Image (cartoon, rainbow, N blue to C red; front, side):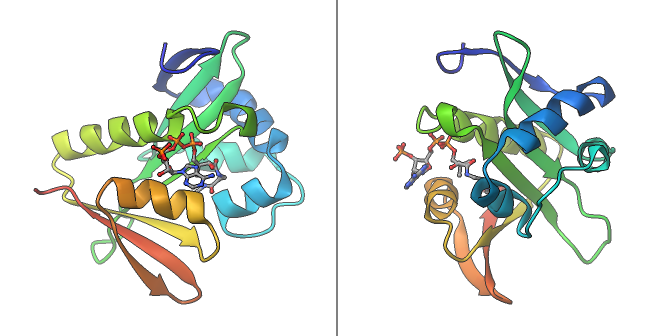
Length: 156
Ligand SMILES: CC(C)(COP(=O)(O)OP(=O)(O)OC[C@H]1O[C@@H](n2cnc3c(N)ncnc32)[C@H](O)[C@@H]1OP(=O)(O)O)[C@@H](O)C(=O)NCCC(=O)NCCS
């Protein structure tokens, strides 16, 4: 077990859309804003479908009841001039137990194994937990159009 109350950490499939929707709905407004970098007053099922659409890879942590309690999304670049992105969220009651750290580490390890050399995460300017998390992976942080961009070099 990765953290107390977590039954499994695994890559999600299309059958996880409903559980992922429930997870996004369960987040408070601020967490959802931080995750999606825009207000999300209502979670449409299409959001989870969009997140789960290949080539995205979505790692989920599931509790003993099968509910999603954390996710980390790896999104490969959609255009040659872009680089891969990650985004993540953890349910408030599961925070500060190392869940984001272990899930991000797994996603980055898998990406590195697949030959990915650079990954970015866009972070709201006031999101100190996420900045600290990215810094702990050695990210360089820069301002980018009102938000922060964490840049990870996986080639080292
Ligand atoms: C950011 C977030 C994913 C962290 O999840 P978490 O599982 O609590 O993080 P972890 O327990 O793995 O913490 C790893 C590191 O992140 C940093 N961190 C996490 N929460 C923090 C907090 N509240 N304040 C400061 N640093 C924090 C620390 O460096 C921490 O290492 P430490 O525990 O050794 O000090 C979680 O707060 C969250 O879901 N926030 C809302 C969504 C969000 O901001 N998504 C980011 C989109 S880019």
